[in-house]
Length: 243
Ligand SMILES: C[S@@+](CC[C@H](N)C(=O)[O-])C[C@H]1O[C@@H](n2cnc3c(N)ncnc32)[C@H](O)[C@@H]1O
Image (cartoon, rainbow, N blue to C red; front, side, top):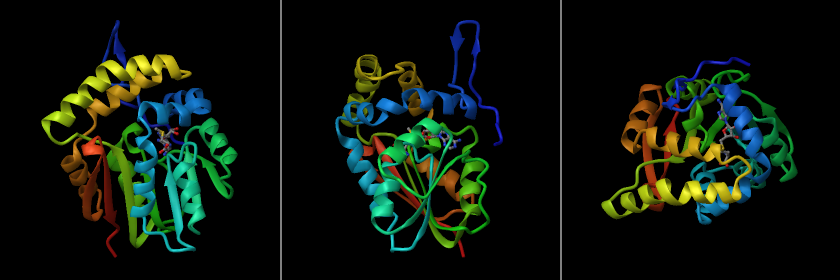
């Protein structure tokens, strides 16, 4: 597995952008895996189910579709796709997250691997998806190109990720939540509260809907569009691999 360097680090005691070095990211998710689903539901106030449901619907699955779920984590999206008749391949850096996915009932191809270096042939999939994974990679344009390489011409991409809330009220409420509620709640329920400092920092540094669309288009995806969920706290980006 390749190990591209992340941009994060620290000088003395002043830390800047969080590290996205795959070894460190995978180890962090290994630590939170056992309580990930519960923590997620609590911290998102139950919104996470709707976000993943929207992701699955946007993929427009036809039984037999070959679908790659990258950064599949504990497999919530993968299992829903398999239940619709898709042939799902789940890839994630963290063996412990994937162990939870197997416990959830995910069978078939469950592979430890890096989004930046997928071990699949060109055009191997009808659709690819990443939910809450793209924000964690060190080189977003390179991963978007790698996703396109493994998607057949005419195939689809769906990315579900935190984004920028629209409107002053949503934005203010979200800022207060990230600064005040999230750290306290994470201390109470997570097995690794530091992981939720990472979450907050990566959300803050993440591009808005329009900028992510433009990065996707630069990576060669076409017909890029997005839909806001929960007032833009999350956005669903969709695109097509040109034929
Ligand atoms: C926030 S979790 C999301 C999991 C799942 N997709 C979901 O919606 O719940 C992020 C996942 O991305 C994985 N991940 C982070 N960087 C990755 C990379 N470069 N390649 C593959 N997986 C990665 C982590 O191990 C973790 O399981």
